[in-house]
Image (tube, rainbow, N blue to C red; front, side, top):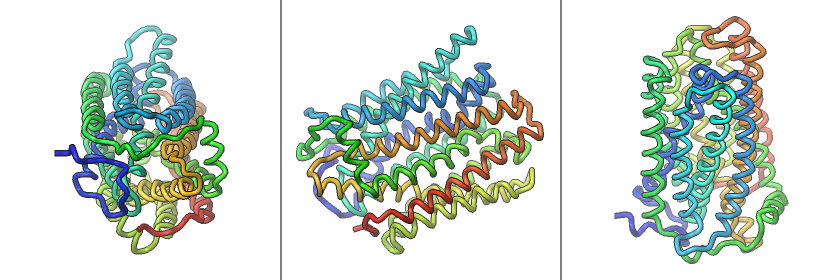
Length: 436
């Protein structure tokens, strides 16, 4: 059915529905385990694996920095890969195998001595991020290889819808976690997550065909990086990515804490996440059309201001006010759908400019530069979160006034400031507006 799907065909028209669905399939398969990892593994490591919060924050920070570095390495290798199977598919398949193994290992952390558990978790996170990079960076580059113009935005929207669908499924798991606890659920996350990752990545890599017209670049990674950094618009987009990721990292890491502090009941987390997901799921398909109508830049920057307002409102809502919290989550979700699609569409324009100027195809390197900055920002945010919670005196089950104030500042004040800085930086981007 899908054997005719081929990237590298020169066209600017819209992509077919089946192409969008197939492009989103590996994102869905890896998205559910990734959603649970980002949202709950910090809590799992502290409350079930019994590791100190500051230590877990340090492990997240250290492995995330490694993740950022490995992005550049893997992207460069992908851009230079020359095989009968294409530039991207071998990496997606290999990354899926590594990622599945890491998910199984992390959620099956053995109850050995604390120092050995720390080593186990740290090693598992290193493998996790390496596998995740091997899937995500080549997969993102495929969208730019695939087609041009509005078709790319449609593919990026499909990717985001697939991840949002995985989040919906993740909400069910989160509800289960709230009812019975992480310890009995973790084995199911380990086994089902690994199978889902393997199924989605391997079938995608097997079915999709890469056009032989897409030729690899012939330069080392550092040369590609230097060329990327010469582009003023590329540098500005990296700055925007840093600020945006610093804002969204707080939301992903502190989800369970937010429900406990702002609502007083951790079981309310699915309600807040549900409102966020509704904003993502129903608005994302509209983003490409709205960008054509109102202009990519205008809609892109408006989304940043919307996110800043949504985060700021969290600081003003009284404890236990579920409806206003859900409304804020909905606003943040709508804003997130805009950024998820148009950040990448804007970067695709910069990639086109580089290709026209140099004749080289560095799609993966451009996306890896973006993810390098995002992951560095995430690492800094997680380290700050772990340190702040530790200094506030957080222990499992302790939600003192000091902890509550710390969580509220981390989830409202920091993201609001970061999104305002992202908006200010985005105003300086000059790459061509609009979508063909």
